[in-house]
Amino acid sequence: MPEAPKEGTTYVHDSSSVAEKNKRVLEFIEQVTENADEVQKKVLAEILSRNAHVEYLQRHGLNGQTDRETFKKIMPVITYEDIQPDVTRIANGDKSQILCCQPISEFLTSSGTSGGERKLMPTVEEELERRQLLYSLLMPVMSQFVPGLDKGKGMYFLFIKSEAKTPGGLVARPVLTSYYKSAHFKNRPFDPYTNYTSPNETILCPDSYQSMYSQMLCGLYLNKEVLRVGAVFASGFIRAIRFLEKHWQLLSNDIRTGTLNPQITDPCVRDAVMKILKPDPQLADFIEAQCGRESWQGIITRLWPNTKYIDVIVTGTMSQYIPTLDYYSNGLPLVCTMYASSECFFGVNLNPLCKPSDVSYTLIPTLGYFEFLPVQRNNGATNCINVPKSLNEKEQQQLVDLADVKLGQEYELVVTTYAGTIKTILLIHSFVLKLINSPKKFLILLCLFVVS
Picture: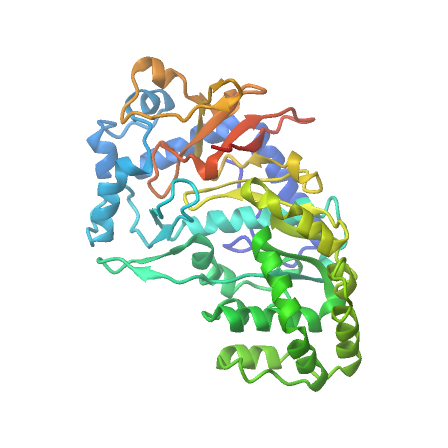
């Protein structure tokens, strides 16, 4: 199987030039996507051989077989509810190999946007490397369209959320909180593409006000170095701008005096910010002049004049925020770089400067084993699919492999992961997937938001 570009033992920056690293990344994407079917066969075989003795696979009689044909014939397509009793056992402290041969390291909590209730998704330590792999692909792709991004900083508003412990003592938290608290993020070596205005301490601060205030303060102070801005979701970035609307006078005063507002009491945050902040009356005057205007149209390009684009999710329900982002940014490009969920990370946008309505993603076939269930429409509306606990022969034949999806057809995504998610239909955020044409042999999937 093609190996992802590595530096040492992790997917991080090394001594080679940025251009050379970018070239290796793009070559990796092309290699795995042009040989997607072969890569997928190897991914499935590896998942099944590793987990040959886990209870769930034995329960269905797979008996250690790793070929795709047997897997398709024997293993049922399921939903989360079908494995919920197994998840509950793990959450209550059962350490036997129920879903995965590797120890479950934590639970990832879903956002609840798909079906209303939050779900607990078991994961393993190794999955952090796959998430890091996908992150490592984003900026080399983006740099084809916007050169020079390694010459400045990104101002991203990133936050952790609350976490809990299951009765068995495992942590349960959102996938991004897991990533930000991991050594992959906290101890990352310097990389020009992960050079953020926000110190780690401000991102990891559990107090949302102190985190937002300190991240905004650093972003303002380093305003001329900022080349890209963003958050995870469009709503989160707008929340940051509205925070600035409310608190710009306090922030400006801190920059003028080189001191930090006493409301920021977290000692780690204070130490990190004060390593950056120095008195700058001229910058404070500039901020006050811009924020004091009656209109805030174009405030992003006025305060951060070198910004090239806004990196946020604006698909699905987030599309309602596009006019507001356009107003604040004077129409800067809105970029959606990747496609992911709590269960699995999937792919990247190879045309990141496209219009939000044209966003599509290329699936990276090393991240998991992907199958597709065709979606039928009646009178233009997508039918909800009631997936049985086991498919009959006809229903099983409807599943399509990654390399065999048809142009123009819509699908629900069925995923099998290294962490023990086996043939689970995701129903991700009410999206369906539609294959669209590609100038190369890449598999490009358009994510369509289905309004119920």
